[in-house]
Amino acid sequence: MTLTALRGLLPSKNDYVDVPRHWRADIAAGATVGIVALPLALAFGISSGAGAAAGLVTAVIAGLVAAVFGGSNVQVSGPTGAMAVVLVPIVGDHGVAALAIVGILAGVLLMIAGALRLGQLIGLVPWPVIAGFTAGIGMIIFLQQVPLVLGSADDVGTRPVIAAFHAVQHADWGAAIWALAAVAFVILLMLVVPLWNDRFPVSLLAIVLVTLMAELFNLPLARIGEIPSSLPMPTLPAIDPAVLQTLLTAALAVAALSAIESLLSARVAVDLSGDARYNPDRELVGQGMACIASGAFGGIPATGAIARTAVNVRAGGRTRLSVITHSLVLLGVIYLASGPVSRIPMAALAAVLMLTAVRMVPIREARTILRSTRSDAAVLLLTMVITVMVDLIEAVQFGIAVAAVFALRAVARTSGVRREAIDTQPDPADARIAVYRLTGSMFFGAAERVRSDVSAEGDIEVVILAFSQLRTMDATGANTLGEIVRALERQGVTVLIKGVPSRHMALMRSVGVIDSLRDQRHLFDDFPPALEHARSHVRRNAEARASQDRAKVVAAR
Image (cartoon, rainbow, N blue to C red; front, side, top):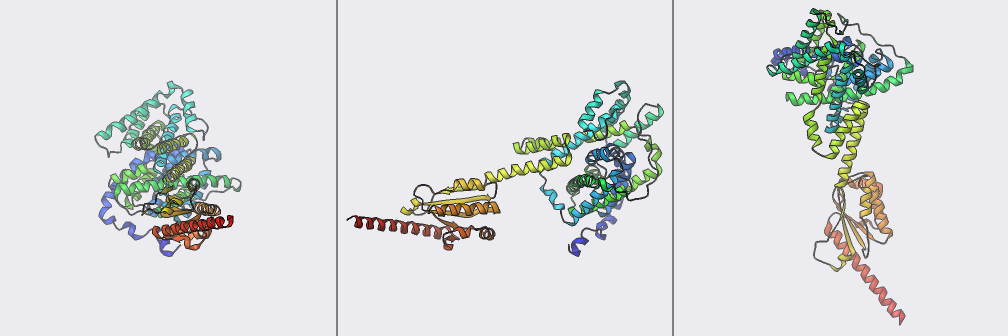
């Protein structure tokens, strides 16, 4: 990596060149995002199994580090629902302490990915996979709240579908009535208040009101519990070599999710803000540093948060100052309001997450995809189902693999070979000439069909292979062409090749297609010379046959 490229992955004074023009709007937007992020940070911390304090610390530390070192000017980072879903089984298998190690390892992997310029690969993730993944995460987050509301929970790491089913099956509905009422009240407020003012931090208002009522009337609602009144000192966790390999596998999953979600969120930020200044490779580096810092302070791995990023942009945030302000507002909560925050009912946070989860499901996008093509609809549904029932990362991998298979099939269908009639001045020799035109892509997905379609049946003596409409070719396709040429030549059929694009010539020579020709002069740039050579070849063969027939007649006499 050159020094210039490395410098592009690090902060610079250009990151803040617009601050003098937007600082008032940035501070106001940052304060708004901080208020919106508070209940989400607490809720996602609890949902991950690490606790509310871990979620709050993550929002402060990871949010601040990603704001300074990330590749987007307006992206807000912190704990997210998707990451919480991935972390639950890790906590179940290895305990909360393992999250710091996983976060640091994932951060290192993200920084390496950024340094290797892998940020652009996000463009390879198909739209149906993203939509199915997002819908599946929304369903998981909703299901995770059911046991919290009903007051019964399985072991940490139990699949959300099973845990929700067990919670409903074994619920004490008499004891759960207050929690259900709190959920209904919070959701009602979050639906009604935005009808008058969509910028008002209604989720915070709802949580405050439920907390006040719970305190005043001493309602039997489970509370968050103790929240630290200051940031812990950063420490490096002790690493047990016996579980390091297992944790590294978990870190790969966390890093993959952080990369996917952060880059998608940053792309959304570009569309919302209209600011095209965005560096995906630097974003990976910044998120990696955020995960490392969060792990050192006892937080959980973080990603870019699409909802909070959208709030930041819509509230007027245009520079990194807005994101930094968001973290400082949350830091103030830790030092000034940890006592009141500890009294927030769990049901209120669960209600916020339930409505957030429902809104995460991209219903309009899903409807569009389901109406588009059957293959895209299948990819969306498969990705969504595997996300909910199996695993997030496996869902993305499987979705991409299935989408790739469908895409290859579509390319293969538009690729192949067709026999063309000779539309020049008729010539008696044309009856013994076959012209085949290769179109689209000559790759492993279409090679066998091309092999079966090219033939020299009957009286065919010359085959012309026309390449001018061939766009792409891989080694399998080139090797198949070589085998076709050699097979025809063994049958006594002369093969002429016409119009090979210069970009394919090196591959065809290296694989041996050109060497398979009977004569190197059988390679032509244009069709007329190739056709004339084929006709002359047929005439010579006809003359040779006539001469042989005359010789046989003379010998018979």
